[in-house]
Image 1 (spheres, rainbow, N blue to C red):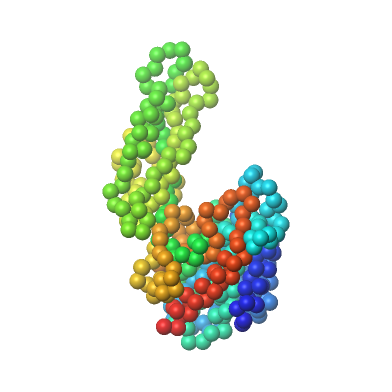
Image 2: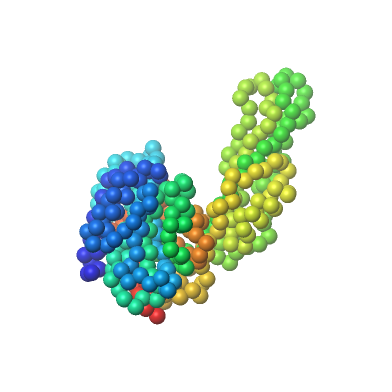
Length: 355
């Protein structure tokens, strides 16, 4: 199909998606819009909960599979919005609306690219398009839950705003709950075991702790204390002070290794919430990456989490839009970013699927 027509249809779909509330777990109606978009091209699809997926016409089970994936759920709009987050307006070349940048632009651009190649024969890989739900909250009916239903995936492009640069690695995430214990007492009496005071040394330990291995693409593991809570009365020394620690894991460590290191060394009780959000990467010499580099794209490591964390295959994060706009007030994406995104997706896939 003509690329310009596909681009126009993709932009129209993005406007429609913006106009529909689709908070994580509430994507029923955006799923219907995506179904209708595939129907308009007579492309068969399947639906699992609010995840929609489709295969290329000449699917060959003897070939490896390339997954094209992005999500259609959104976060809730923050209170700083000055516009209606569900009103898709174009002003000065910017399409405003909740989910326009994260990750609607990438989603519709990948869907347009999938349609472009849908009828192609003699591709080196099968193409599997997945418009997934519950990405923003890593929910129970997200891509992770869909994977057992899908064919084996060998390599993936995950659509997120990267300014169409190649995010060949992504940091994983482990969140820890920490408890600093002390002795509760009345505030009027002496107490040498005040958990709040003891927390000062614990905070210093976390502030100064470093992991020895540094990644070429993702840099150091980043550890940040993000929450602290203690006490509920002015005249009572609390029995414990609670902390939350956010750890962004590079590709030199598994989440299990990070948990073991911190739990062995931390001067407090520490418990991880989950170990499933591991770091992701793809070999810089992978043909998919080389195809992008040949088009002038640069590689980098991404500090933000995506559905890549659900995948065990090599994967690359790539899409139109700018990550710094994600979850911001009056979110937008440039129309030219979508146009360029579709064009680059198609060129990168051409350089990979027909080698």
